[in-house]
Amino acid sequence: MKNKMSYLLLFISALSLSSPVIAALPFFLDDSPTLAPLVEQVSPAVVNISVSGKQIAPSPMNDLFEFFNQQRPNQTEQPFVGLGSGVIIDAKKGYIITNQHVIDSADEIQIELKSGQILNATLIGQDKQSDIALLKVETNTTLSAMPFADSDKLRVGDFALAIGNPFGLGQTVTLGIISALGRSGLNIENLENFIQTDAAINSGNSGGALVNLQGQLIGINTAILGPNGGNIGIAFAIPANMVKNIVEQLLEHGEVRRGILGVRGGEITAELAKSFALESQHGAFVYQVNSDSAAQEAGIKAGDVITAVNGRKIKSFAELRAKVGTLGSGKTIKLAIIRDGKSIVLQATLKPPQAQPKGQTSHVLHPALSGAMLTNKANNQGVTIKQVQQGSMAEHVGLQRADIIIGINRTLIHNIDELQQMIDSQPAALALNIKRGEQHLYLMLD
Image (tube, rainbow, N blue to C red; front, side, top):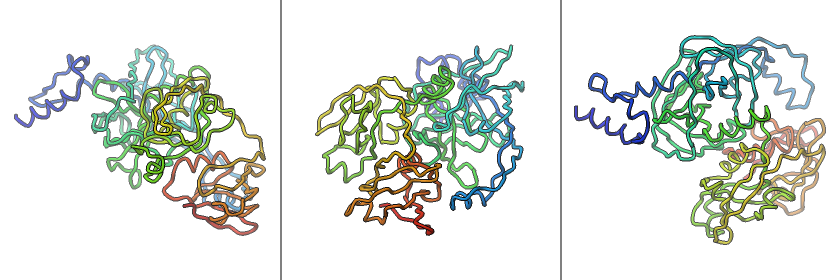
């Protein structure tokens, strides 16, 4: 009984005493602590998703044709089916959120409620960069919705429930904790600011709910790290605040009208922190401020360290990029900045992205590419080195005029934007796949 009381006290301490769950939660079932009342409250808001459609059959030959910039042969479409999970966020209007990759290319989307009822869903909007999709169902059935939590208030060690449809088995609940916050550089999505949890999540959980002990949605389960797609206690979820921002734009516009701050930067290394006399390595270091950008108008300068967005601290440039990238253009944000050892607060109004004309030259900010002038190759076939400054870092790593960058590591690169996105994702190694005349080679960036 002593051990059971210890577990009970642990769960009580994790819950807010003002939470409505406390009043309804019979902690003992046959003298054992239980989360069953909480699960009964929130699980009707989690649905199973099945999709079907047609897609081009993958072939190892496709990459070879793209690698050598050759036209692919005629390709055939093949039918596919898929499974995932979703979360009802508006019971009256029938809105459901899931991962974009769950419904990608689907011609038919079906929702299965916990009761077993099957409903057809329509796609309201989707955003590939954040991996969020918004669905809608029409039904006379009374639905249950899950409220959003403020995911910026999460702490490592908080309890979390994962609810979804692993392997198509049907609704499953697992318990864990928040293992880490602000995870990025995983190359899973373009905008990464993941919650990491050790709650057991497997294939089919994608789009399902990560829930706190107050019955609120803290994240959308998205990816796992493990061999052959199996659970090893490392899983990732998109924070609820990012999801909420995306949903608001999808509802208003049917698409995401992303806001752009207009800075390029990177993470704060130990060497950088020492050089700029920074007390911490947390924050986003600004390498460059783009002209006519929101950042320039706000007064941000190269060498600034952005430490918080709207009063919420950030740990990295990737987190800054993810937070700003899920806000809409026209939104005004407050940025806490360290400049020359002093703390200041600036206000910036995000601008819409500006399309880069074909062939326009640009500098890509990576130290090893300093001194290289880049331009998009015609027909979206890579990035051409237009000029290399003598004695520059770009010359030092081996770049030459007329080189064509067609990939990083083993990922194809079609234009400057994709090159920058790969650099911003901070992979463990950066190997440029270069086409030089008829020769193909790799150049490592330090």
